[in-house]
Image (cartoon, rainbow, N blue to C red):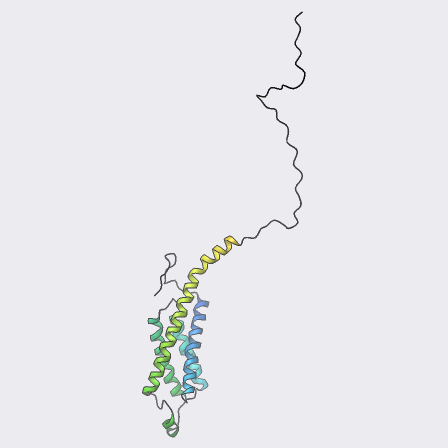
Length: 194
């Protein structure tokens, strides 16, 4: 799907807090869509059904959150979770037969319309989560390089604003030139040979 830099392999395992956060996101998305769709179709979601669905979705998501997952893994995971949540919601809230006749998904086996809606929801959600997953892991692969570049260019200047001036340097000593012949002044005295 996307190229992985040679410096970091694609199968780097995630840390525990990162796995928990990713599992929580997948759980919230899967359970939120399932509950909203179930309520929209005329069903009711009981508190035990929602709690069981949360535990089921979180356990499945946590098992899959150890590494980067492509759409080919996310799609079947979401499809299985949607089917399990549909059954769980239907079993946790039994309806009388008169009410079930007018309900969109009467009984445990959904009708064709419900299967199409579940299929669309699973497909779109899987693509959305797979794109987010790829973007997140690409960002995490690039983050160490970006932080190193930032640290290299953002080193603060450690000189104080009001620096105490250093002591004045001593004036340089005049050094005589080795090959220079002084030509100014009176001529040297010649010893008179008398």
